[in-house]
Length: 480
Image (cartoon, rainbow, N blue to C red):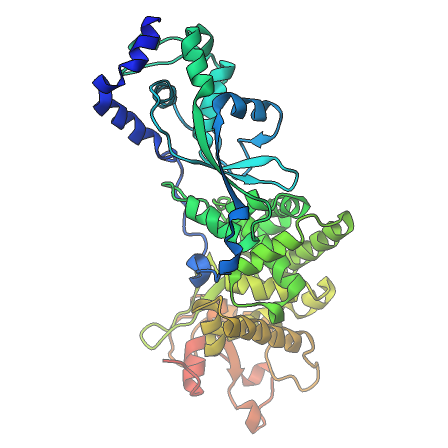
């Protein structure tokens, strides 16, 4: 027996060191991930629990096997095992950590479970344990996964004689020991209920940087719809209307595209109160959509983006917050509000550009008025936004406002237009009620000096400009 093989049998002398090796291998390393920035407002449904059918958990949905590393290597070479699906971040370990894993195998140290998901064609996708599998495969190939350079063991603490050796440099008993090492794998069957599968993925997703719901969908529902979503997430029309300094992380932009498709096709009337399940089921049902359907959905999405930008520009999908008794000035929020995104995109995909352009001033003012004057709309876009009633409320109120603005009669008009407001604002941006400067034209309202209900005309002689808050307070409409 070689010195290397004898050293394998002398495990007990290094028991404490083995425990340290094992503890370092037990979790995948995500320490170099970049933290997300608050580009989007948090939603109540971000951590919503899903009601899962207990009958979905059946022994047929899971299988537990012990596979030799040599068998795993063969499955990889035969394209039956996908170790680098799009949702995974790629290989992040350094050679020291990778070498420790190989050392643990040669010392017969038990390793944590690896999880895979079965695809419809019978192949498998790695869900948890990617770094370990890539290390095994890379060492047998002789290539370090990160840079494709020769993979030689380094800085081993126990099997020090193996430092500097590749797989081909090992003695035959060590090669056999490595190839025959059994890896415990739990495979999630492709017959598993989709919502249950999603829940399982989330529970496995416990690393330092967990996958977002959309990153999980990107793994589970690969197909034509997923490709379309990723393509539209970087489309010029979408990036322009989002108006962000950097691309959102964790595929949040892709989730926004999915939200649009789900609501656009199923409508808010068929929403069931569970946002994650609503999007999961839609993506699964439409996983392999036709080319014609892709073209149709793409056109709808781009139309909605273009119409939205024409009206709101870089303020698209942001909430407008009114002033108050202490500070009359209103301001636009910087973060994108997903609830506003839902109803804005849904309705503006249903009007032609010429209709929107003809009424864009009235639509913009009407949307700001909703965010200022309608408490029910404010609640529906800020509190419990995944609730069925609030979803329907915001869709219905935005739709009614939009229809009214687009069909606004030209005779005996009730409201002043943007050109008139701009003229008054440029002439003197002083609030006619509190006599303080109005900092932004969006914070201004033009109203009648003599009330319209009392016969006041909608013309410049009877017009005055004021803070939105002051105008509402003067009319007895302000909220506390």
